Length: 106
Image (cartoon, helix red, strand yellow):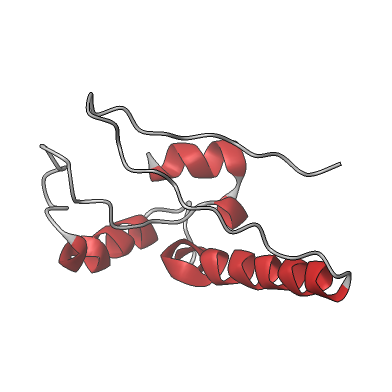
């Protein structure tokens, strides 16, 4: 999956996270996050991944994106635009979640 995402989106747009809660089956060898070093080592053995690429996958991409988000936050704050602070309601009695996209204000 990681290689496919890299092929589609590029190495600057891929990362890994730890969404192990709520899953019934995990890949053999990736039972929990303690196995990530093994995954990264395996990727590094291929010709496709460099040490720099592995660094991006392991967290540098996420840090870069968070910095960009903070820049936008600061720009909007300087323009006097307050943040939108909304709570997401819990699931309803039927287990349906409330999810909506609130696009940019025009």
